[in-house]
Length: 477
Image (cartoon, rainbow, N blue to C red; front, side, top):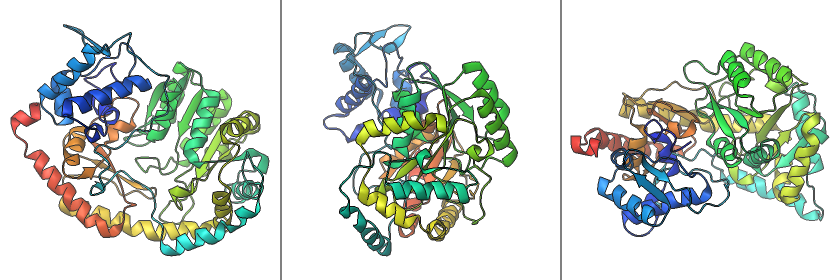
């Protein structure tokens, strides 16, 4: 929670204040507006403590005077209270709206000239665009709602779960959503109440963090760095905190790219079943392996009676603009989550669902197509980084969309802000964690246009050299 321990949690403030320079007016006014917006959204709550002026200035790459002016303005407006010895805190009487889902944005504005190293979505070829137009044509012959999804698409997804995934599934267990993000949001809204504990990997997909925070959940992180998720740690934390929901990505974990071994999956699945712990198994990166070999079985397949909800999507495998995802629901959760989807929007886009049905007639062709496009990009990015930034380290993942890069110094959040001034948008790894994480990680996607990768990495090197050459006064700000 921002403000609970600001000195240890500075990286999280990078996400909270991301994009603050993109506003209008002098820098203090822009900064004050961003902090005020976080209070209004409920991301900063009464009593939350802000970082000290000097560390916050250093993090943002501005003078201390800029921070002081912004905080003075907010204090005068009743948003903050400042006391000697207790620091600056959000006022108990500050206006605040109900929490809403607010996906964190990368650092830097949205200027067209920027090189964006935060977007991890596949690009469409001309042939794929034509394929989409042809595939969605059947949708315009329909004139009915399908609240739980196009029946033929639900049947095809159930067939794929059963035949390819070894997970017997009926169409009634499948609900089509507007992307995996909507599925996660519906699950959280249905199963979580304010104050409930939720168990997540750390680091993990930032969209899940934001959804669970918006639901008012108390987030409990299970470490995955240094060897992957440990089932014993997961079980101990579950017994200690009594979570109402867990979120796991066993295959090509976002952002680290790790794959949970079979034995660990078996132990986790057995525990989830025994504890009757509703668990989201995020499958969105499942089909993005580079070898073509299938990964270990899903958790849901290893414990068919467990309350495990698998979430999938075509966004990573094909194109994010399609906005087609789905939930595979255990029988006990099919009715409440189906109702939640109906109440949300009466059903998703029919053209998009018809296109998805067409594409999923040959899922292996999709996997091969994506593998052939992404593998060279991954290798090129790795080669460029090793050449241009040899003191940055990473392991080449066997799948997924990211390199999880370790910097030689724990200054990733400050470097992220510095890089923004060089026209680079980056995402620090610590912003994807629900517990304090060493501030030395960056998540770099290899789904960018390969033709732009050399320029992007060259710009990244220049920003790093400039950052390393800062004067002592700049480092202390």
